Structure formats: structure tokens, C-alpha cells
Length: 180
Image (cartoon, rainbow, N blue to C red):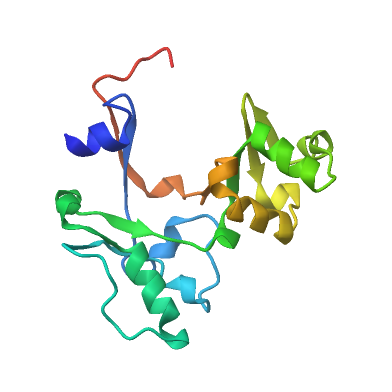
């Protein structure tokens, strides 16, 4: 019940049950990230602890371990979730959703025309938001990085596209409205 209230808009959302191949968890996604990167170890069970601080030695060599520790560790108060996570570097995203208003401001600062960007293939204006297909829009790595750096300001959310053939169950919340 708590999962539904926290993550499914007070029981108005939906839950998708997905089949994940333990030997190749990245096969859940249409576009898989390169397996030779440190981010390739991007799937795992969340480790619940009373204290989240990293206990290992801190050095430049331990940065990937430290990063993984903080991505996959939560307070033990959330243990009931039994969560498993995927975590990708922003450059492996398929779609980005940003606030159109804040994107406009960022473009103006850089002397760029947002309306020109909005007319590109792979960019969809949806009310207050822009949905950007990274491949189709041919967004530059520099602009994508800025959207990541300015995540909080631009309300950026980075998405991976899943293979919906892996969905084994869809559960609709008990407060879902058919007209939405």
C-alpha cells in the first residue's frame, strides 16, 4: 500500500511487472549502453542501511565504488520496498523531458533560438514540457550535458525506453480514472 501511495499518484497510476534476464539485465531496454563502461554495472538490489556513509577507502580509484554505493543505498526505513534499480549515465538516455520555460531561459543565455530547436525532428512540445528524442533530435553532447547539469533548474528527467515485450503484468490503481 505504501508503494502505491508513494509512487503511483495515490493509487491513480499503474504498475508494470517486467521480466528481467538475470544474465543480461540490460536486455530490458531497446538501446543498451556499451558494456565496457563503469556504468555497465547498473542493475542491482538496493542495500538498506541505518547509515548511508561509504565505509571503504576513498581514493581516485574508488570513485566508481563510491558512486555505486550511493546510487544503490537507501535508509533502512525503506526496506519494505525490496527495491531493485537501474542507474545509467545521462549520456545513455533515450529521451529527455525538460521544462520548456526553463529551457527557453537556458537557450537565451547561450544565444540560441529555442523555436528553431523545437521544430527539429525528435522534439515534441507538450504543454509546459519538451520531450526530446536524443538520437532523432541530434542534440549535441554539450547541450545534453547542460540539461544534466541543470537538472534541478530545467526539471530534466532522463529516460530509457524499455522493450514492452518484457512486460508480464499491468496493474491499474484502484483510483484510476478512465477519462485521463
